Every structure is written in C-alpha cells, then in structure tokens.
Image 1 (cartoon, rainbow, N blue to C red):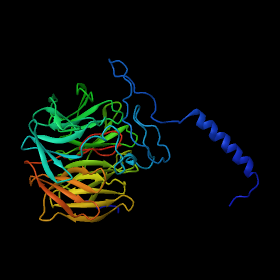
Image 2: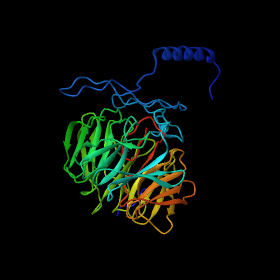
Image 3: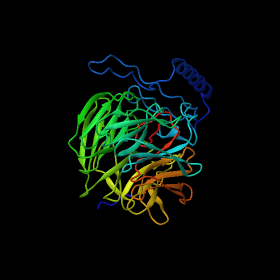
Image 4: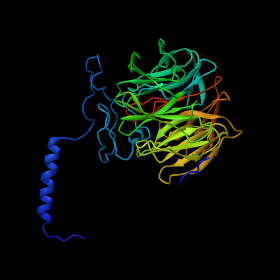
Length: 410
C-alpha cells in the first residue's frame, strides 16, 4: 500500500502615491475585470441560453478576486477558498424560510425519513421510488431531488413545505451533480456506464457521455469549474471530465489492487482533490490539474464520505468499516483526530449543520443516523430510521448555489 507524503527611502513618495490613486480610480471606473468570463456558448442545434441567475447571498468579507472560470459560473468569493460562501448560518435568501431538516433516503425501504434536528426525532416518512440513494439540493437551491436508482426516477421535494412532487423519469440516477454555471444537471448513471448531461429543471437529456470504467458515482469540480473528477467504484478508476465540452479528457487506474473509490472533495485552496476509498481504507490525494498518479493517505477501514468544516480548516472523513470519523487538518496537511462512535456503527454519507456544530451521517448497515459534535467528536444522538440509510442531506445549508451530491455548496 502506498504511504502518505506526509526599507525604502522617502524620495518621490508623494509622486508615486498620487500616481497610484489615479490608477486605482481609473480601474474602479472601468469596473471589475475577469469576474465570470464570457457568456456560455450555445448548444449545438439549440438557441443561445442566458447564464443562470445565481441566488443572492449576504455579503462576505472580500479577498482577492479569483480568476475567471467556466463561462457563466459565478466567480468565487475568495481566491484561496472555494468554500468562502459556506460560512456558518450565511444562508441565501432563497432558503432562509425553509425549516431545518435532515432528509434520509432509506435505500432498502424506498422511503425518506425526515428528522427535526432540534429534537433528534423522525417527524415524517415519505414514500419514494425504488432504491433511493441520495437526496440532492438543486443548483438554484429550490428543490431536493431524491435519486431513485433502480426505480429510474427522481422525486422532487419542496424544502419549504416538505411535500414530495410527481416523480420525473430519469434512467439509472445513482447520483446527481450540477455544473457550476447552473447550465446542466449531470446524472451519474452507474450501471449504464454513462455521464448524462440534462436540463437542470426538466431533466430532459441533452448529451450522453459513455464511459469505459465501471460504477461512476461521486465527483467534485475544480476551483474554476472547467473540469471535474469522477470516481469509478467498481473498476477502481478516476475520470477527468471537461465541463464545457462534456468530454472525458483523462482516465487512470488507482495504484491499489481492489480499489473502490467513493466520495470526492476538493481542498479549500483548489489545488488538491481527495478521493475516499473504502477498500484502500484511506483517501487518495490527487493533483487534479496534472492528473498524475495520486498518493494514499490511510484514514481508517471503509473510508467513505468527505465533509468540509464551516471554517474551511478541517475535513471530516467517515470510516464506515470501523465506526469512526477521522479529522483532516488542511493547514497541517495531516490527520489530527479520530472520533469513535459508542458501540460502533457504519457512518456513511451526510453533511454539516448550517451553524457548523453538528456532523450528520447515515448508519448504512445499522438503520440509524448519527449526530456528532464537531468540536468534541461526541455522539449527540443515534436516531432509528428505515433500512439502508445512505446519502442524507442536511438542509438548508449556507452557500450561493449547489453542485449536487448531498450538498456541495459554493
């Protein structure tokens, strides 16, 4: 198994200051440069579409402007932190009236359990399609999509009312993502061996991209949104996909016999991708730009889900096979803590509460959900739900728009 790597003179000051002020004033008059780039190019055979409107969000302290990204993508709020919009309780006006809930898809029960996080109790059980895998917030934050994998449908839930709508026919929706400009939904059709680009509202098919790996399941986007990295669970491979061209531009086999990559998450500075691997029992550390062979950082048995803290300093890593959560410090580039669930468990997928104080994870093989204090690692609650709970969504969460899965917000 690979191992981890672990003083000036005062002469001319007034003249230079005056020149600087004049230059700054001219720049302000011209307006910001490089924020969002050109408008998206039209689809072949389709009329030109306007870039999707990004939901408003309360102002945050500005850092240096990030370079222009994918055409139509809202620019990042900070050059060195892709999660700058995800600070505690910084909710978009779109979601501020939504009740705080935890939506748990029960894969074997064909239901979604709805938990009130204030009481740690299930307050409703919603029947959905066959084999729901993940509950995914839409790009515009207005809808929660339940991925009914073997039922070949998506069930929309209105997060304002908790009411489920009419299912939409979508074949093999194991997981669901959205391009950073809001132009497409991307269905991870695991058994079909396809990435299917669809209309993000109607889910009408726009382009199908066949892949040669097996089990496409999770992904995350580069800081500029121009490409995304996809894990292929059943063949132990990674894909690199050009977002705008909708084409696979890179593919590699992980250097571990029997590798089963799962969740994918980019570092706050946008330089590194982390890929959980449930058979290699750790995270692959990948340079997405070069897409060279990654190195393995062991975390624990059954490494599965990856969730960034609200201050962008840490990442919580669920180790499903041993009932633990490892804590990775981005600044130290090291694992610093490991939390053990009392009496074990099978922590899988989930998310962080809006205030950042609680990590919510499904117990895949124990028909339960765990609430974990992110300061101490102590278990706050263990809540019985249906059979086979999987990709639960904590909602609402901070952020301007969703990239999909159980909640990747920018």
